Image (cartoon, rainbow, N blue to C red; front, side):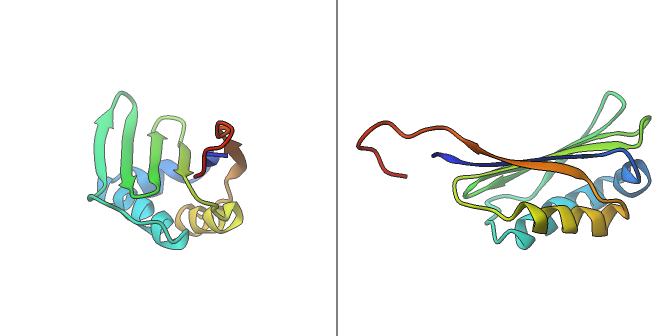
Length: 117
């Protein structure tokens, strides 16, 4: 396997909490810290049609958040080349937003025969 992909969304609280770029940056950094992942650059947050988008480049891969301000929803993903704890990530998001996200953790990719991660 090449990595783990944590996918989450919430339809409550995102606009009120993550409608400001600084709060979105904080959530990205908190997720990395909670999952013991290593940022290699500061978070990048930009306005997009209807909301905000943020990404944090990690030594292990990336974390991203897309906020739909009109719907009050957030879509979040973290990809890592090593195992991550989805329940810890969900708890961190719930603490930030005041609402537990729906989430799933998927394994991604298959290494070719004879290769190692």
